[in-house]
Image 1 (tube, rainbow, N blue to C red):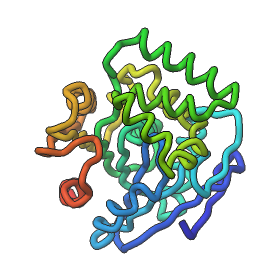
Image 2: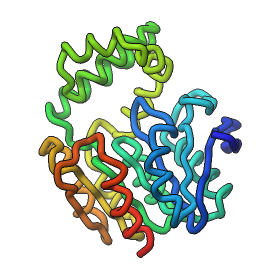
Image 3: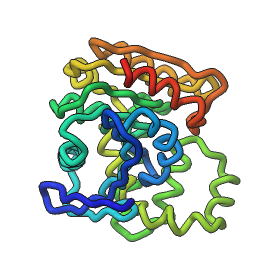
Image 4: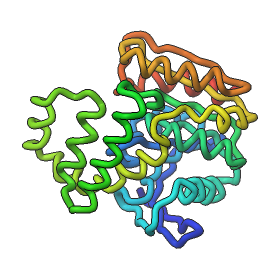
Length: 258
């Protein structure tokens, strides 16, 4: 990330850009930074200006409390202005929810593509409410490691793998951005698909899911496409939530070129 902008509330945001052509802004999901999407950006840079950025509270970007989803939409608006005044958006997981909200808010967006936005997670409203309450408590008490564990359990990761992750070198970095788990939780609105907001998106929407991902993630993506007036759903065979950039990039390039 070699560039910086200042969001309207004064938060510095780090970003990087590569390639030439129409701008495509890539929006990362939970427990990740813009660097997570750098491999995908590299594969899009031969046809587009591919832009990655650290969402507020992550990586080299700053943070300004109190948090609100609207502030992240303003962040994207400032970034789009900095890279030409119009852009297509791609968001993965909870970053997809942010991309959809940005488009519904009327930002100058040409198209929106999302990969497995995690609405309608198994367990229903009760489990999501309990997760939010326990996450809020853990972060309030400074127990960042516990907050990360809560999130990993929510994703369905096995307990043995969670404990293994806690002993790994990456754990410290995960704890560093743990407070942003509350941001992603707010972005997903309790896991309820925002049908009315998606219905307000007038530009083409592509919702993608992996054929090897859990059924509920494919269902969530399909419902996003169904709710969007100009929505399309596509499944990538053999792909999981950790989608291969070499498989995804041609699909996105075709959509954004259209």
